Image 1 (cartoon, helix red, strand yellow):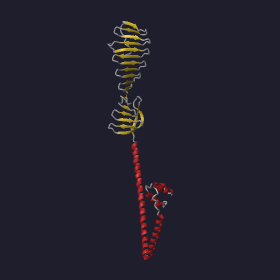
Image 2 (cartoon, one colour; image 1 turned 90 degrees about the vertical axis):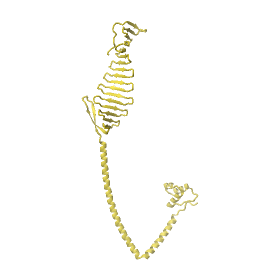
Image 3 (cartoon, one colour; image 1 turned 30 degrees about the horizontal axis):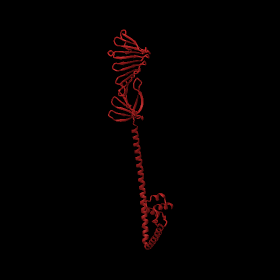
Image 4 (cartoon, rainbow, N blue to C red; image 1 turned 180 degrees about the vertical axis):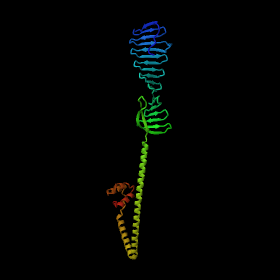
Length: 334
């Protein structure tokens, strides 16, 4: 509809508002036309009008506002934008470029572009774009994911970190990498071309090769070490033989002069016993007085240069006395 319905015939009644600013005319079919001071015309129609319009208003700027008997309202702007409002809360806006936007009562929004591509938005932030020509859908999530759903059921997932993964119709997943962009149609729309990303497999192969090389090098070193051990063992055996020969020689000399050897051995034993007695007498350190506390014993040892850590590691007087005996530190007498 480009304009209001003009009633037929002459008005049966005319009037002016009490303030004298609005003029109105009534017609035989029940229609009424009112003109406001600013030039706005309001066309009111009876409930039984065949066109179903209840009121049609034409503003001076060319904007039209239509109210239907079923509660629908349509606003037509001079720039070509049309806004339809329905009683259930549905709102449909059609722009001059052909883009249609539907705001639905369930808080979802559907945008239909002139080329047939639709974008449906949901309250949770999800957006679904559908292309009727290719049958491809794009599911755009608030976290930045873009999931492309192909007509055969396969998917291509683009993640916010730049990685891309393909899920086949069988449910198998492989990583992809971008190769190039090429024109998919005469419209000039570019499509991104991907190929399977084998970098992880290549890295795994490189790691396996490196591990094999490391294992080979380890075997080489082990073989060299075994060879070195064999040479050492041979040298030790020769040394042992030489030692045994010398011991046999010494044993023969000792047998030839056993008395002298026994006397010398006895003398050595006596001297060793004497040296042991002297050493024992030297190393004997008196125990700490019974009245000396554990703390004072620790302080005494530290003061006499004993390592602080070794002193602190002792858990009782007995251990402190053993440490003093080992290091030849005497405790003061009672």
